[in-house]
Structures are given as C-alpha cells and as structure tokens.
Amino acid sequence: MATITEIKRKNGRVAHSIRFTRNGRRHVLTMESAFTRTDVEEVALAIDDVLVAERMGESVKRRTKVFFENAPPVILDKLVAVGIVDAKPHLLFSEVLLRFMDDIQDKVKPNTLASYNTLVRVILQCIDARVPVDRISDNEVATATDYFKQYSPLTAKLFVAQSRKIWNWLIQEGYCQTNIWKGVKLHGQKIQGRDFEIPEAWSEHILDSCPSQQWRVLFALWRYGGLRRNEPLALTWSDVNWERRRLCVHSTKTERFEGRESRIIPLFPEIERELSDLFAMEVGDRLITLSSRSFNTVFARIVQRAGYKPWPRLFQNLRATRENELIERGFPAHVVGEWLGHTAAVQAKHYLRVLDSYYETALETHSLGEAKTKPILVKKG
Image 1: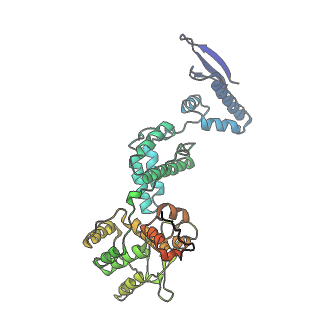
Image 2: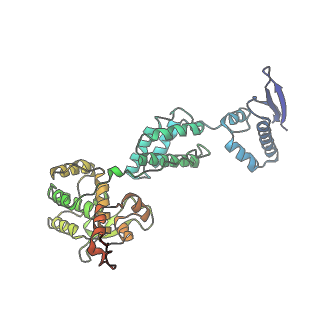
Image 3: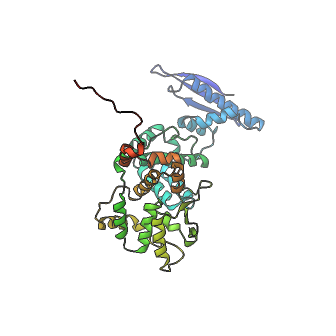
C-alpha cells in the first residue's frame, strides 16, 4: 500500500513523497511543499484504490474516478508518470477547434456556420492557439469575456453562448471534463438608438422605386408581412391560398422547434396586389429567384433612390414597424406575434415600442368619451 514520508527542505518547507509497489516495481511520487498534507493523503488514497482494484480485477471506486476527473493537471501529470493514470494526448486548442468546425460542417445552417467561424477567429485573438485545451483555465475565459465586450452587447452575448456550446461538445467528445463557460453571463441590451419607424409615405415611395416586380414583392413581404430577410426565398406559389387569402411562410430560423416550422399569415391587401401582378407574369414555381447576397446593398440603393437615407437594421426595423402597426390597429399582441413568428418574450424585448401615435391617441377627447364631471368653477374676487 502507499506510504507517505515527509521531506524537510533546507528552506524550512515540508514536502512529501508517496511510495508504493506496483507489479513488483517500486515507485516514488514526490509532492512538493506547495501541496498540503491533505492533498498528499488524497493522492495516496487514490493510488491505493487503483492498486486494490487491479489486484481484485474490479473497477476503481467512484470517488477515485471523480478525483481523477477534477484533479489539477500537475497532479495528473505525476500520476501519469508513475502509471496510475493513463496518459491522454494533450490536443492543442487550435486542433480541437478545427475538429469542432469539421463536426458541425453539415449539421448547422450556413449562417450558423459562418457565425461560429467568426467566433473562432475572435477567440483565438485572446486564447493561445497552442495551449492544450484541457489546460485552458478560468483566467483565459475571463480574458476572452473582456475581449468580447468590445463588440455590441448582443454579439458579445452570442459569443459567450456559442463558446459554452463548444465546451459542451468538448466534454461530449472527452477532450475536457468541465465547462468553464458555464457560469459566464453577458446580458444583451437593446440598443434604442437603432430603432426606426418607417412611415407609410416612405413605404409607398420605396415600393415605387423598386427595379422589378420581384423586388416589389420582396418589399411588400418585408414591410407588410413582417417576414425575416431570407424567408421570402422559400416561398412557392403553392404557399399562396388565393381563396382564403392566406400565405404559408416557412421559417428556417425556428424550424428546429416543434410546431414552428411554418406559420400562416393573412394575405394583406398590399401583398396580395403585388403577388397578383407577379403571378400574371407567368414566372416559375418560386416567387423570388433573386440572390440574397445582394439584398442589403440593393435594398439600401432602392431606399436612397426613393429619396431617403437607409435606416439602421434595414430588415429588423421593417418587421418592428409592422408589429407595432398591427397592434395599434387593434390586433391582440399574441396574434401579431404568431403572424410574425416569435414568442411573447421576444416580442416584448425586441419589437414593441411606445410610439408617438399612442400619446396622440391618448389626448384625443373623442376616444375618451364625454367628461362625466362638471368643470370646477373658481369664484372671482
């Protein structure tokens, strides 16, 4: 069995050695003075458990497995040196990131893959690519978290969430034991300065500035249907129900959630008019055949051609404008959220706003009814 011997150093500190015999061979494991007597006793107890398990042909006790899983790398290295723990290859951080990207290559959507590529480039700016992945500590995580803060709050929050997912994958694949990102939180903040309400007069001018009927349909779907940027690309004529005046919208963003693969929206008059004109042109099965790569650039030029300056978050603010517009017209918030394809929590956080028109409506006497009390008369003199 393992025995512990004290070693007195010249500087007055006390180190320890653990001696044991395994397969007829004597081993000595030296524990420097940085380790307490309790640390040394835990290591000796784990060695004894391994020796007993080998002699009895059994598995080591659960407490020993937990000890090995949580032991500092310097202790594990010592146990590897004497053969108590099997050596594991220390993969470099850059190597593991490459394996992760290869693994998700065909499992996630292109936009998600591009987002992870961005994170990899950013995180390698603050965590050394050459460090073994199982040696990355809380200090490196803190450095990376501070580095993320130079980006917008929402982007920084996304980086933390994606880093947490990467470490979950590392644990699943056996590259590390704990998720050091688990307790890290960055709260995304809504940036009020980027909100913009698109007036109805602007919408008509922008519609008239579109270079083709497909672009007119695109703008109508974004502005009056509240569709996300790329959602029109998945629409086919079979999604248009002319008789019931409804449109089936396929959502790639929420399709991973059960029951949210698609949604049905009203075929609003502004959309129905543009779709009818496009249908009369005898186009193919898909409504939109344009490339999404040019959406931002071309749409910004269309807005400029109409005589306006492109607003922040071109497509997000179109959705938010329609959201508030429909609620202002009296549709229940949960119904509008269903039409636009998001939950009440997302609706409240990112879309609903206090519009100037609400103040104006509140001050209109006809909306408040007749005054029920007589005016107060002030006596003169």
